[in-house]
Length: 71
Image 1 (cartoon, helix red, strand yellow):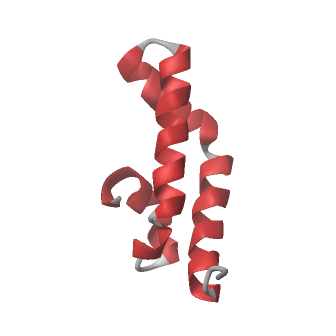
Image 2: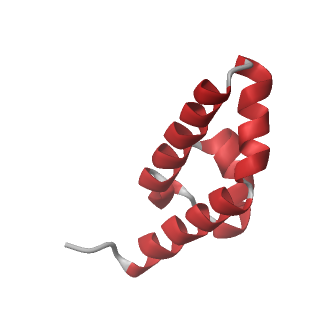
């Protein structure tokens, strides 16, 4: 069974945000771990969890904040 339209919309919003801000997220992760491979893994795991849990996002306009604090 496919995603419901509202879930797809939230997942797409989160995906677009992740892609648009990948470098920012990578730099933040790198500032903590000081290793490029580990920073890439952190961003990848975060992206997976964010898209997987995007149905929990209540308002798409707050997706950026939700990525940092809400999931």
